[in-house]
Structure formats: C-alpha cells, structure tokens
Length: 165
Image (cartoon, rainbow, N blue to C red; front, side, top):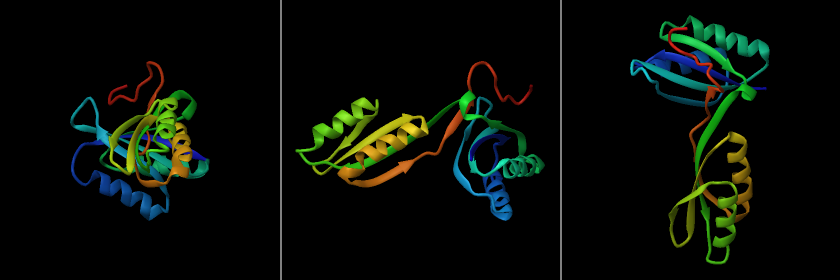
C-alpha cells in the first residue's frame, strides 16, 4: 500500500539528509520525495510516498515526529487529496510516427516542449496514474530518457496542514 505523507520541516541545511537517514536506518523505502518552500520561507514541505502496511506507516509517522526539525506530519489519503507529478519524456520520433505521438499527447493533455530531428520531448503534469498511462502509450515508440519529479499533494477543499492549527 502506498501512502502519501506530508511533512512540514524547518527550511535549513541538513534537514533532508537527516530525514533520508532516518528512513535508511529504519529500512523504510521512499518511493518518491519532493521538497519545496511553503508560503512561509522558513518552512519547507516534504511530500514523501512510502510503501508499507499500517504498522510501517505508523512507525514512519512516529519517527518523523521525533525529529527536531519536523514541525508537522500528516498522512494524505489519495481520495481526499489533489495529487500531481511532473514528467518529461523524450521519445524517438520519425516523420512517419510524429502525428501518432502528437495525438497521444493531445488526448492526455500533455505538451511537446522540445523537438529534434529524431526525438520529441513531452511534458505532462497530472495525477501519477495519468503520467504512467502516457508513459505506457509512448513506450512502443522508444523512450530515450525520462525524468519524474515525484508526487506532490495537498488536501482537497479548505482543509490545510498549516504551521498553526
């Protein structure tokens, strides 16, 4: 089971290293990790996707809460969260198949952001499932290179994980 964990941390050097070290020491696998500044520049938000059962997720949450630099830890259920991931996918493209690739890109509401004589680079920012669908559809053309940001997520509606609640 994949779980999204949103963690507010102090925005200072070494926090990412300490957090990643915690996961390594405990043997927890990070499926994806995205970190960025919040509306308060002294605070960063880590969005961590962890694979594990309820016991592992509880351990992750407890261990994170023990960290000095951690302000808040919250699980974000997928059904009540807005989730996005950005991916750039460079695919082989010949004059013969460019039109087919372009149709797939339009259907998936992605964009072609670079063109070369032999490749197209596609940008997609969508739910992780849709990013995966597009990747599967372009695999037959030959994926040259791919980069994914990892998932970011927020609670749907007015609920928020603020510094002060």
